[in-house]
Image 1: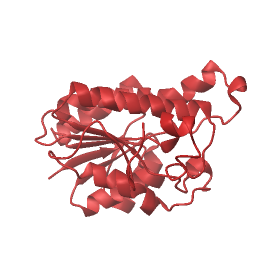
Image 2: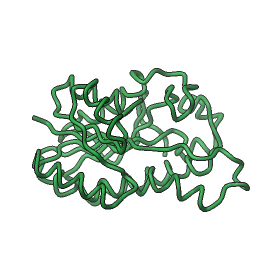
Image 3: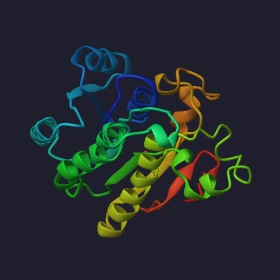
Image 4: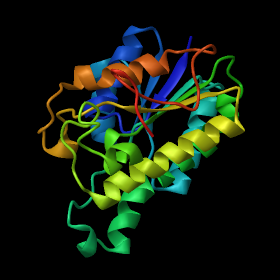
Length: 235
């Protein structure tokens, strides 16, 4: 059976991704730092709960140890955990504001990926999906009107947008370093979740589509790419 870990899966896109992958036959671990919410999400999706705080080295190492003992192999890792941070004008954003977002959205993905690499390398067809955003596209930022089809609502949020751009580079670097692992970034689109106070134009079912699709690509799928529901997203 395919073993999958989805971080930040106690609600929203993460929980919907977990539910869909359980339906696809995966043994899914719902990763969450809140035990109550994580266990509730696991029950709702038919998954298993894995306690993990992606901002804590100790927590991530402990989660990797649990997976090694229970599953021995990890086939799919979905780095979904993320925070929004402040949307203040760039001149008002502090380094502390940036660090708070990067610690989850970038460093968290690096912590989890690094800890899970030994388990992923035991898989016959390992896959990593990093949940990014069209707001992290430098091409869209440079010419948002020309790329309106990618990001229908462009928000100038310095910490969030730059963290997603950094996550895209992290994705490309892992893909280059580990050619046997399919590593891709995805843009779920403007989806109604707690992250945007449910202002998004898509449902979580629609937003999770590209995450699930890339989680299921297998050994012959693309790697080092950036994809949305409508195809390739410009870097």
